[in-house]
Amino acid sequence: MASSPELRERNLGLVLTAICQTSRSGGQAQAAAPSRSQIARLTGLHKTTVSQLADELLAAGLVRELAPAPGGGSGRPALPLAPAPGRLAALGLEVNVEYLGVRAVDLSGAVAAERLERGDLRGSDPARVLARLGRLGRDVIARLARLGTPVIGAGLALPGLTTTAGGQLALLNAPNLGWRGLDLRPFQEGLGRPLKLDNEANLAAAAEARLAGPSAAERSFVYLSAEVGIGAGLVSDAALTAGLHGWAGEVGHVTVDPSGPVCTCGARGCLEVYAGRRAIARAAGLPESAGPRAVAAAIAAARSGAGGPAAAGFDGVVAALAAGLSSVLNLLDVTQVVLGGDYAVLAPVLAEPLRSALADRLLAARWGGAEVTVRPARAGASAALDGAAWSVLDRVLANPAPHLRVARSPGAATGPAPGSATGLATGPQTA
Ligand SMILES: [Zn+2]
Image (cartoon, helix red, strand yellow):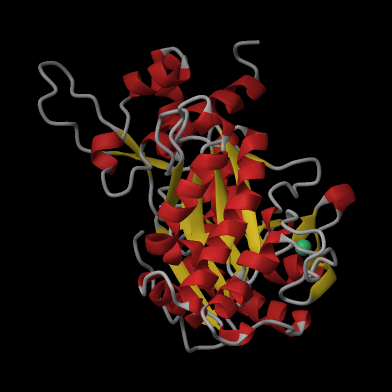
């Protein structure tokens, strides 16, 4: 049993996961990178086993040895291990109501290449938009191939309900794009890489969960992703709660008033109607189609002080959000809300009033003395792209064995030739 290939593969995954997760803290790779003894402690594996497996990962170029930490005492210095940049990457892809995004992330977490094209994609033609996204993705794959970095797969973040049940690869409904019933297998074929699909809020929440600290309260949260619609990812102990169909977290369609206006989902009085981008624009006295400038107007209104109609309108947004969210937080027994998308921008005027309103309604706060936290996301504006790329890289961490050979011959997985000679708008950059 101890020498079975399955066990070796599993242990190889444990070692690579320990190296990548411990080394993930931003620019402090050197300080955080674990030695072989530390990996043995983290994984519970014998140090000899760890050394053998680490040597395999080193030979494949998936990890690298860093200079020994200073002040290590006498004897042979322990060499910290870190994921190797540029040896293997995955694509995060996103169709947002306001942009198309492509981001290649490698095992070290560095952004190897990136493309972003802004535009208003409400009511757009999915065939044309997906053809454009496919071209952007293939451009990045080809560019990385020239740099010797194979792209092993892609994750696609969409603002709606997706399914992979029964071998499907489909978007069922994205109301704010006006897209419905799309088979994405032809897109996968065109990209020439295995494709994973998920809701953008789930992927953004997963990216945020990667940055969670060690405390139990910090590792559980509701991540809100708000733009035209309001999505959410439910995270418990740093793991996403996906639900039976992967659709958990549709906070935007929690009922605030059953006799309210009709929502894009077909029901009445959903939270999205009272606290989404259109409602924020209305509250600020702008047309519903105002777009991102509604957020800036709402910040100005909230700062203008009490009394004005715009400030009162913004209070209404906060009240609706507190009403809808308190049910969700009480159901999950979670006390932390992470603000993403528009809400992250609104955080300076949104976080405190929302926290205060939630503290009045949360059982854990009222009876358990728990602290309610409302804070902007750390994962940034590209959280869904990062989460989409990591949804693919996490498979490598779970089982690196099939990738040892790919990583040794980096030119092996080149994609189709780029469509034009114009090159990339954004070159390779570090995270
Ligand atoms: Zn709805």
